[in-house]
Length: 408
Figure 1 (tube, rainbow, N blue to C red):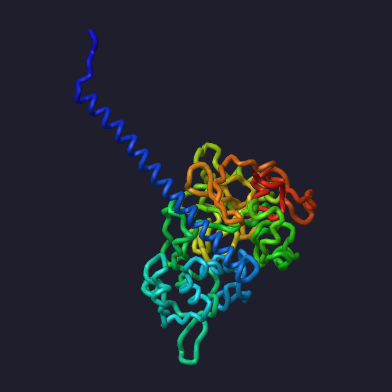
Figure 2 (tube, rainbow, N blue to C red):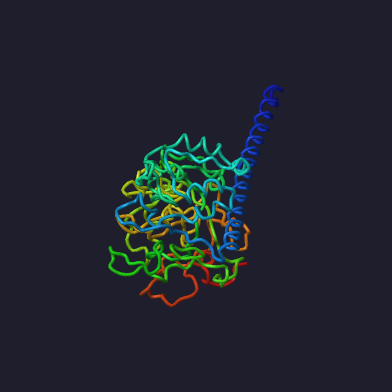
């Protein structure tokens, strides 16, 4: 005797199948929209780099600014200003840049031009500042008003300087839902490419480093961007279509996910960057750091990768092309040093997006060729100090100004 399904059961099963397919389709459509929005942001940042270059004949330094003023973080930005600050006039954020580029009087909130304010991709500028901090600055005008100097204080003083807290929607990927902590600097999901260097890669070449008693290495800065240095498109000898300008980074969400945080105090990275992979728990399929690994956090302890849009430290707003996308990031010592392995990452499945120096946006998969990850990086005194080609395969070559063959 053949057993028959009741019609109601069959209809119910069909409905469940249809609803499941619809849900998957909606989820896929939402992810496609988020990825497209992120791609558009990168295109706009690439265009901003072109416009900056047209204006100044060079790209902005990834890190620079006023100062330094040792011991006085309120008197300058300590040359830690991110290159994104210089780019915001070219991404329709002129009112914010005008506020930053002049003395900031804490009791006198600026009123932007109405037409310019209409272009702001967030709450009305003045109202948004009023909601933030009104801390007194360190300097005093003749009338008794307190103010911060032009180009602001150190980026880690965001709690006292409201412009560092203003969110720029063009610097956030729609796929990253993390919101900035209260009184913390605005977050960002895009980072400058420093190339394939590790040793002292985040320092201005030639800058005297007291903690090492020598000048910062000048061979490690092989990308389109570096701290304290402005390159031009003419310096990109691999060609603009083969050189990365910027890529994605995931912000810290409070977990130990490797893509959003940095493992600290990992020794030996300059000669074996693959050691960074050992900071991840072997039983963690989603790449979480081991419980005994300390994380590198912003000074307030609330953020890590992408943790401060105004801070030019490679730790927060830069990456190098060594480990493939969505890999862990590691720095080298217990103290915060601007060197290590800092990976590009995203919440898009399978990889991340980058914008090339010709303005095109590419999706880079996590299985891209990375060469020999246990090969020493290029630095003064390295076994491969005289090399031109990147030791880290196609990914390494894409990140350098002149580090390998043309990438098809």
